[in-house]
Amino acid sequence: MDEDTRLTHAGSNPQAQNGAVNPPVVRASTVVFPDLASLRAAAAQPFAGFFYGRFGTPTHAALADALNAIAGGAGTVFYPSGLAAVAGVILSQVRAGERILVVDCVYQPTRKFCDSMLRDLGVDTQYFAPDIGADIAALIDDRTRMVFCESPGSLTMEVQDLPAIAQVTRARDVVLAVDNTWATPLHCPVLQLGADVDIQALTKYVGGHADLLSGAAICNKRAWARVQGTAVRLGHCCAADDAWLALRGLRTLGVRLRQHAHNAARLMDWLARQPEVRRILSPAWVDDPGHAMWQRDFRGGNGLFSVELEPQSPEALAAFADGLRYFGLGFSWGGFESLCLPFEPGPARTATDWSKPASYLRFHAGLEGAQDLLADLSAGFARMRQSPRA
Ligand SMILES: *Cc1c(COP(=O)(O)O)cnc(C)c1O
Image 1 (cartoon, rainbow, N blue to C red):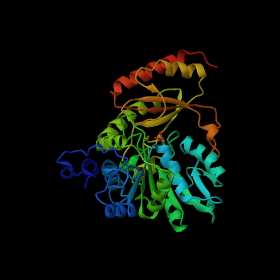
Image 2 (cartoon, helix red, strand yellow; image 1 turned 90 degrees about the vertical axis):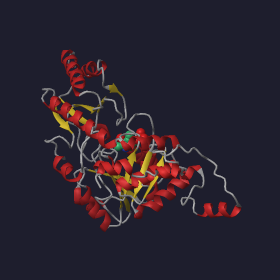
Image 3 (cartoon, rainbow, N blue to C red; image 1 turned 30 degrees about the horizontal axis):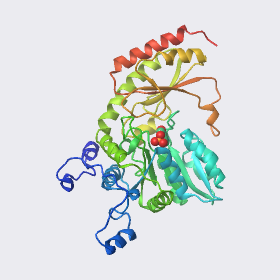
Image 4 (spheres, rainbow, N blue to C red; image 1 turned 180 degrees about the horizontal axis):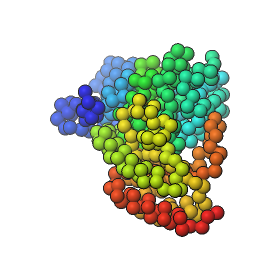
């Protein structure tokens, strides 16, 4: 089946809902049972049917079915945000005295979770360079329970060799979790590449409209029970309205990603020709060190990429950013709108050196017309050039 066909029909069962194409939003806490025997049967198997709202409603089941079908998962667990999914998956696998290996380019709130709460719980985190590949084997000892990747890193865009890493984690009985929010399971089937958990901030491209917060852990058989059990203990769940919005967003994910990628390619082409731009950070960019691996493991690109600039003064960066017309200044990404974010990778890195003087901008190319976005960038660079240097 073609990926777009699967995306259109996965988890869809109109006849179960009076023929309506989409499932209803089933908002529920209490579920009532016709008699005591059915209540007891449901309590014994809370995920088999519809038991209590925190365990999910038919709306969640439809989204889980769709995500499992697209990612090749055995089971999907929902969370109130992408960060909650990251924390929930990590907590499901490690105990005091154990270790986790985390890629150095990981989402910064993930790093903060590891360096604060996880550390206080007695779990050590060791960061590794994104290009480590099979050499990850040298970092694994008998206390190591998990390797955590984010490919590409969502600020600096380093791709990791997931098949090579997975070969090692399989052999050493270590769980491999991948924050796959950038690619989504549509564009990078990380479970097929050997990961045990595909973590999604549904907030981003799956939702696609900057109007929901939710996370998912799409698990293989090996990881599912512990991930689900930990979510039950911690009371993790997501709102039925957000599950419904995520499923609605999922149906158009393919066509949106193609348009985001098309616009990003236009912007990268233009940016690469500006004298202030040293390099484009995106595996979809032909000169990027991760391009060949991206071509091997991914099915497509999207709107999110970064650029490294010659060092700019704070005034020059503000002159660029403050007059932007279509690019919003803000965190997150994956909605239909364009965004721009200045960032500094250096301070958060411990396994790779980002100390070279430079300025960095991350862009999210939205679904606007590329001509308008190019004109906006062009006016921004003109303002930056007129601004006094520090
Ligand atoms: C945004 C993001 C998250 C967190 O998602 P929230 O829903 O905002 O908590 C996790 N990982 C990556 C890579 C992200 O970009």
